[in-house]
Every structure is written in structure tokens, then in C-alpha cells.
Amino acid sequence: MAVATSPHSLLLQNPHPTFLKNLKLPFITSTRLPTTTAAKPISIKCAAATIPIQDLRPNNPSEPQDRVFNFAAGPANLPENVLKKAQSELYNWRGSGMSVMEMSHRGKEFSSIIQKAESDLRTLLNIPPEYSVLFLQGGATTQFAAIPLNLCNPDDKVDYLVTGSWGDKAAKEAQKYCKPKVIWSGKSEKYTKIPSFDELEQSPDAKYLHICANETIHGVEFKTYPTPKNALLIADMSSNFCSKPVDVSKFGIIYAGAQKNVGPSGVTIVIIRKDLIGNAQEITPVMLDYKIHDDNNSLYNTPPCYGIYMCGLVFEDLLEQGGLAGIEKKNKKKAELLYNAIDGSNGFYRCPVEKSVRSFMNVPFTLEKLELEAEFIKEAAKEKMVQLKGHRSVGGMRASIYNAMPLAGVEKLVAFMKEFQAKHA
Image (cartoon, rainbow, N blue to C red; front, side, top):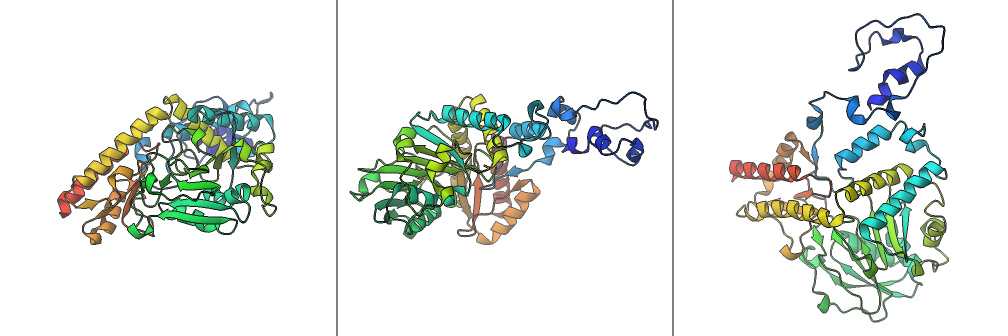
């Protein structure tokens, strides 16, 4: 960070400026600084509190080239303007005299941050008042245990619709705390489709139906959602959270790891209907009990403060873009551009997922000539397009094109794919 080596911070460490002789900083001139001390006291003011981030590097034409197009599945790229705002506020958050990373989670400064983050998320998703929003830790994987522990007794039956690896892991974890039944699995077809909901044989006495709304590894996404006959609908939305509008009232619980679409790793968001809180099994660890976190406004212990702050900045950014309806249109345009390039390659590139359920977030594809995949990834990296290697369990390539991936990134990837095909077809 520029502010970490600013003349102000260096002077605070050593009031005698002779140590500046060999420093090469863009905003320090070659003029020798006076070595005598003035009789009156020196007033030092932190630059980060008053100077906008764009002023710190005013004439740096190389800045755009410093960034790559990051197609990672998570942690993933964040909006550039969000990163710059976080950079400008890192050293001194809005005149508080401290970084968000240094704040007490019970102080008024952080209270304002987490409250605004929740408020903005409620606005984005139009979350009804009868739902609580929890900012937790442990990733979505921890919720695989927390959900049955909070909603079920050990003998209760629950249904799982498994459309990929994450749904499969969730069902297996639930076996420790209740009686899950996998009512459909796409494993035999390598997780490339979603069944017709009318064909599902739901358990009449199931407490809930669990789905993974978007399977990050296999690139399968629900475009509409099933309606359980006599149960709650629960969805892991980790990799398409806030990528499109969602009718929250149709769900008992929505949960998501933040590191795909709305922030850095370390934050897990749970949106839960309030009447479902307070019935945890006796064996439930305190940190998995939704009532504990709801009663304490997500501040039972020290939360991932900086991660929540970053999520809040992303929520602000999404609102400034006009909300999730506009975001969905942008995401659809990016996905269609990439899928059209794959489908129009005459088999050189292939996406195994059924077209009607292809993910707008995670696009898996393979090459007709498997031996070229390593070269594809290597050559793409030279063009500053990184993290295109598919998940280790399925191979091939995967381009994750979350909210923060600009259209220019997808356009560059498509152009590269066409050039690569022309060279190797």
C-alpha cells in the first residue's frame, strides 16, 4: 500500500529525515530535506484520511496492466472500485483514526458497518422482516452440519436433491444428525443435469428439502426452484448469491460462503426464517446454534470484521449498479457469449452440461484434444487470464465469471479461445 511507505508514516518512525537519502518513492523529490529541527512543534496529518485513493497514484498508466482477469472459482475477483475504496480506507477508516482491522467489534464504528451491511443486503434481496440475517464463519461447509442440528431431531427425515459434489457432501454430513434421503442424484450422469421437479418422489414426512442452487465444480444451476410438498426449502447459494433476484420467502434458509460473489473468504451468510430458530439439538456446539448468533446480532464472539466490511462495500456497489435485476442481465450476457463460443467451435471445445441448466457463474469445458489442455492454461496465463484449470475432481477447464468479472474479461477469453483453436484445429 502506498500509505504504508508514505513520508508521513516514515517520519513518525524517525523524526530525523536523513534516512530518506536512499529512498526511491514516486512522491518524494530529490531536494535535500533540512536537517535542523524547528522550534515550534510539527503537525503531522495522515494522508489516508484526506487524500482520495486516485490521488495517491495520479499518473500511473501501467496500473490497468497490473491486474489480471481472474477466473478463479473462489476466492474470486472483487469489483475494482470496491478494492480501491477499501485501499483508501485501510489505514484510517473514515476519520476514525484506525483501520477496520483494528476496531473493537463492539464499538460504535464496527456496529455501523455491520448494521449497514445487513440493511443493504436486505434491500438487495428484498428480505422480509420475518427473516434474520446472520454473518457467521466456517464456510458453507459448516452449515452442512448446522442446518440439521438446528432444524431436526436425530430421527427426523429430510430430503436432499443432489446435483453436484457440494450437494453430495451436504447429504453425507447430515447423516450424523438426522435421517437424510437422497431423492435424486445426478452422479451417474456426472452431474450434468437437473431433473423435472414433477418426477421427484419427495418424502411425505421430510422436514426439509435441500438443494445446492449452483454447483461450482460441475457448472449446474437451478433456473427455477422446486416447491416441497410438506417441507421447507433450503438452498446453498454460495456460488450464485446476489447474482440475480431471489424470492427469499420461498425458502426456510438460504446460506452462502461470501468468497464467490460478495466478499473475501471468511464470511458465511445465513438468511433464516425466524420461527426456525431456537430448536437446536442438545449436542449442538454453541458456535453452530443459530439462536446464539441471532440473539447477539452476529456478535457472540469476534466476527470476521474486515470480511463483513468488504461484503458491505460490495453490497453498496451492487445497489449503485441498480440492484440485482440489472446484475442478472450482465451475467446472462457474459455467460451467453462464452457458451456461444464453446458451442460454435465445431467440437473443439465442449461443455458437458445440459443447456437448460448451464450455470451463469461457473462454465466448465474441455478440449477435443485433451493433450492441449495444459498448453491452453499456460498460454492463457501469458495473456493475463488465470485460474482457468478445472477442479481436480473433474479436470478440463473452468471459467468462473461472477458479478465482478467484467465483460471485457470474457471477451478477451473468447478471442483467445478462437485464436487457440485456429492454431491447433
